[in-house]
Image 1 (cartoon, rainbow, N blue to C red):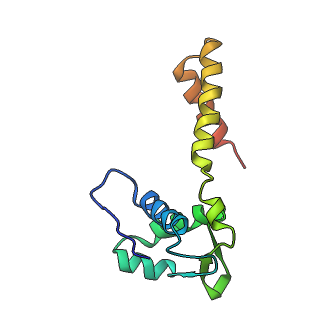
Image 2: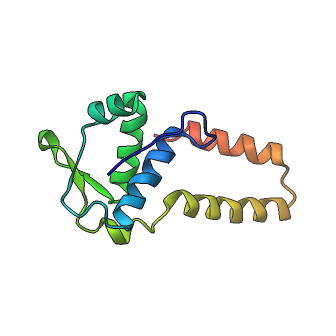
Length: 125
C-alpha cells in the first residue's frame, strides 16, 4: 500500500490518510489482518507529525477499519471492507443540519444556535 499525502492540498492531512487507507481496503490492496506501520514509522515515512497519523488511526479504529493490538501493532480490521462505507462524520453533519433547520424554522438566530452549541460542547463531561 502506497500512501501519498499532498501537503499543499486543501484537504486536511489526517483526512487524506483516512481516505487512502479506506481506498486500499476497498480495492483489496490490503486485506483483513494485514499490519499497518506504527504511528511513528508512518509519520516518519510521510514526513508529517505523529499526531496527524495518530488522529487518523484513532478515527479509523473508531470506524472499525483498523484495530490496535497493543504492543503487537495495528492491523486491518476483519470487517474493514464493509465498514469503509460507514461515514460517521457525514451522519453527524446530516443530523446537525436537520436540527439547525428545525431551530431556524422556530425563529432561532444563527448567533443563538452557535452560542447554545458552544455552551453544550463546553459543558460536556
